[in-house]
Amino acid sequence: MRSLTNATWIKAKGFLFFLLGLLSGGLLLSDRPTWKIALLLAISIWSFCRFYYFCFYVIEHYVDSNFKFSGIFAFLSYLVRAKRQKARI
Image (cartoon, rainbow, N blue to C red; front, side, top):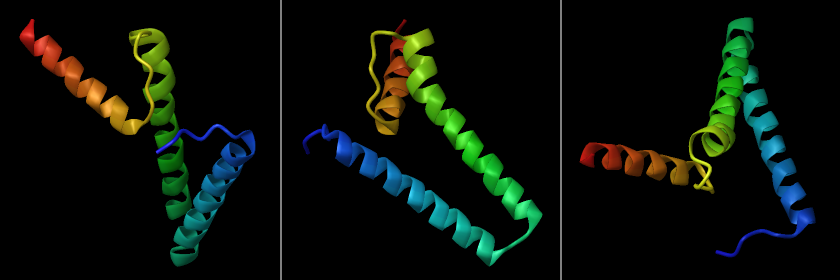
């Protein structure tokens, strides 16, 4: 699969992710419209955003500046390799 390089399509992809998030969150809240569910949904979204930031910014800038992450699976494979390398030492 080729990398997406066209700025218009990159923006469209981001907008579609935003719409998907709004739709799924709206459906969850319409199924169970309580403040508890809304709060838990907001905490979940915030936590996943922080995890994403951790995977791609914190690790790359503060832990290992030589490795460039390309996705969650690349991050997970990085963790597995790092654990294996520590086990060998």
